[in-house]
Length: 364
Image 1: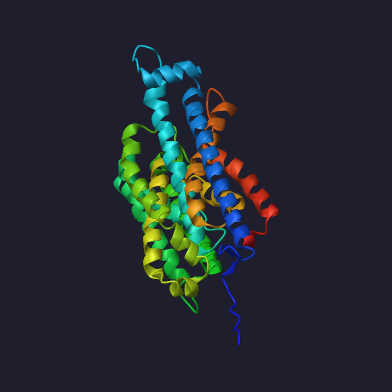
Image 2: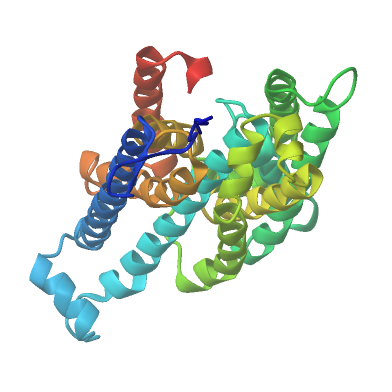
């Protein structure tokens, strides 16, 4: 009597070789195509970012030719009349790189951990928490330097994050994306009213605050950049290593827990990263809008939902948008300029509307 054996995973040929099941090769090919697309996008984004950095050094109230910029970078000469490049535009450009990457990463991580397409440090009230702390620091103790702003901004962002997640977790059920969005908007409105009340009662605080709250990287020097850079670096590392965990959380808490993830620890680590990124960026440049909201959506529309690819591209495209907006602000109104926070809102709003029209918001 003969028996027949079914091979589930492979089929044997007469030569003893194995053939994958139909569809396996197609899936592998699709994965390779996606990986190639991500690599191509990363390379293109990096090249564009380098070009924008160079343009940021050359364009301004005093424009410089490309060869002059290269000479100033490679052979600095105090007598060459290019002090503006090394002394002002290089730290300004580095500040733009840091702030843009921080905002892009914080937005991508927040949208992943909350499973909310409107997850953004600005919309959820985290930036407002940092801003309230800075206003209170100006009003109560007369803090006037960015070194002082940093500590208050980080503390304010941390407290706002804790309050938002705690309030969203009250009542039946967990902190759902809808509850987080509503709670964040409510906290944001409440903090904005506190800011307005303090500023109305103190003209000195208003004068010190108004230059910061529109979102500026102009006038930033190396001392200010180096104060914030360590916080942003730690936050970026925490955000980038969270990609696999965010992929698990995207499937739901129960599935992620079944896959062996420690949900509470993951959220705690990611929230620390968000606080460092959003608080540090807000301290350095003020509340810059739309980068953390638009960039993650744009990246996911190109790469899909895999956060291992989304987050690095957010770190590249965030500063690309911010530096592009900063350069455009210098070109539009010479010899003056428009604050980068205003320009990112002008650019980001129509881009986000286009993304929403292209795809349903819930599918983003």
